[in-house]
Length: 122
Image: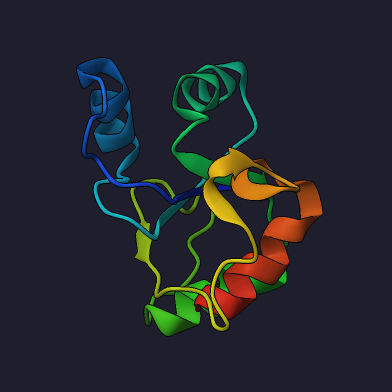
């Protein structure tokens, strides 16, 4: 499972990119969705890579996010489909610029480091 978090706002965003963000449910900054690792979602991520950060999320962090939203996990192929987590800004702020790719900045693929960011944002 991948967690995708919107980092940048919508000012100056091309229409196609903004529509993709809205389709994923990422309408506002610090919104997060959990999606499966499929080629379809890989295409979405490639299109919106300059506005989001993503990575492989652990089940423990997802359970904490569900508890914070007061939801229960549902069984099935993608139990989190349609669930948008509205997170707060990370405690102690972002470590780098939100306009540069990870590791210098905040955008892009964080792999397992996404769990640390989500912990600070819950």
